[in-house]
Image 1 (cartoon, rainbow, N blue to C red):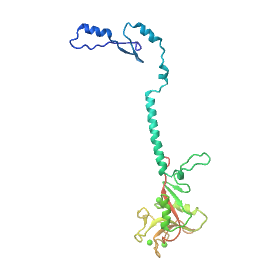
Image 2 (spheres, rainbow, N blue to C red):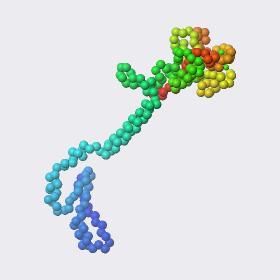
Image 3 (cartoon, rainbow, N blue to C red):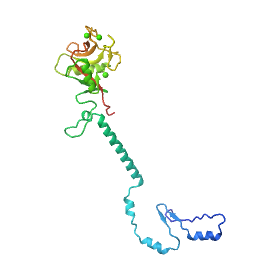
Image 4 (cartoon, helix red, strand yellow):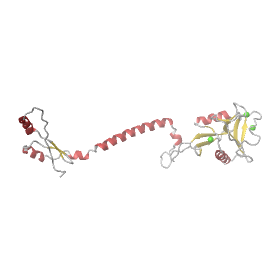
Amino acid sequence: MSDEVCYSTVIFANPGTSANDVKKEEETTYAQVMTAGSVQTVPPTGSTEKKEEEEEIPYADVRSEQTAPPPGTLKEKTEAEAERDILNQTYTMLLQYFPVESYCPVQPGTQERMCGRCLPGWRLLESSCYYFSTERKNWTDSRAGCRKLDADLVIIENLAEQTFINETIVSYDGQTWSHYWIGATDTVNETVWVWVDYTLMTTSYWASTEGNNTPDEDCGTIIKSQQQSGKWYDNSCSNSYRWICESRALKGPD
Ligand SMILES: [Ca+2]
Ligand SMILES: [Ca+2]
Ligand SMILES: [Ca+2]
């Protein structure tokens, strides 16, 4: 029954309208008829000729109506395109500030970029990256070298970090003895050791008798040696040693 054509005629008669007027309106009014699946216009009763003519006309618009996307799909496409444009804009801006070439080198085999959490040649421990130099410079210039790479001299906060750094320098090259600058200094207040981020040194791994300021030593190193590798020394900041940088690693996949 729901597919049957139903129509109704509604006449709003003004107060005072005579019965004849109502009748007149009734004769000339035709109604829009709706079925469950389509909308059709029903011509005035009695125009049989026109009805037949309409029936002969093929449904010329049917094909285009079938191929046109539903309004919902069109809206989703427009939204997706807008989102794509925003993402492209964000990506272009990121390329200006993020060193993509450094962190995401093109792989020789696939020619695709692969991003690492650290710069190539740096070593990762938890959320930090570490660089171990082969050059030698004084403490200030070593620190400047780290800062150029968006890093700073290493801050050794716990035994895990201390062990990792010691194991790395022990296996780093064939040298049996070498000092590496770390980010500790007591230049401002003698015997008050602070890190390069201005935090107070609360955990330390000094060699025995070290941290002694003898004769005038205000910058910290970690030593690679056969006897006491990994121990800390205070040294003259103008000495030339290797150095260790630390930077925050890029966030990896969870
Ligand atoms: Ca650290
Ligand atoms: Ca000192
Ligand atoms: Ca010393």
